[in-house]
Length: 332
Image (cartoon, rainbow, N blue to C red; front, side, top):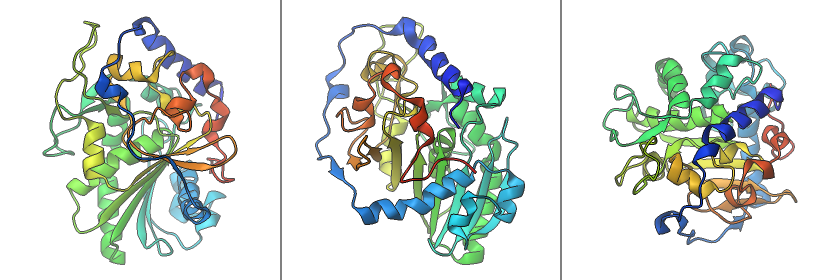
């Protein structure tokens, strides 16, 4: 939930890169506009996402609650069959795995940042890039890098989640796996959405994330700042996600600043030069009049989409991060 700690964490991001912001020309490749048109979701499409919104909220519950599927958010998906749950809410975010007969899908839920816990806050502020663990992500080009804090947390629960997902697929003859989460939980869901298909075949994977921060590195030609090492090459995680995860939905609420982080105080485009972070495709932006818009491409710069609507953290409203998402706030 929004708190002073979350605001402090946001301020930390700002201070960590403030000295690097500069009016440097942006590469034309980064400024390329999206070719597809922005389009509104239908009422049916919005309603179809609501069960996953509740699943994401339930990830804030303790393992004891999700193991029994006994919580406020749990009531919206009464037929859910829990399989496994874990995490301590501090060094390892809460997570759960189960099967939803109504969705005909195994569900994996990841907790977002517990802003009252110091260790969880530190995870968000570890913005250095790192390679993916080759034992968990075999065959992925080492040039692909991600947010080190998110990667370090994903590793801690990866094998337990893999085991539980395999169990759910076997027990229910499932053909679909859906991963959900809010904030940090959305980032972990995205990483698992790349990890699990490397170890499980014969099923389709979908990620539905809410208020997801930037996880990915961008392909940058060069860096004017010697202290920052930005990867050069055709491979980056954002492109890897677009090529391998065909069902990604990133839902951003109004002026929520978190989806623009890590970012610069003056221009999200500069982030992709100086820090190298970038979103994959799949954004759905909820506007101030509660219209849900599909924003094609990576970090769509239109003011109808999150990147254009929140050009810097001062233009954001941290209260929007918690919701509501079609009337649902993110909590247990």
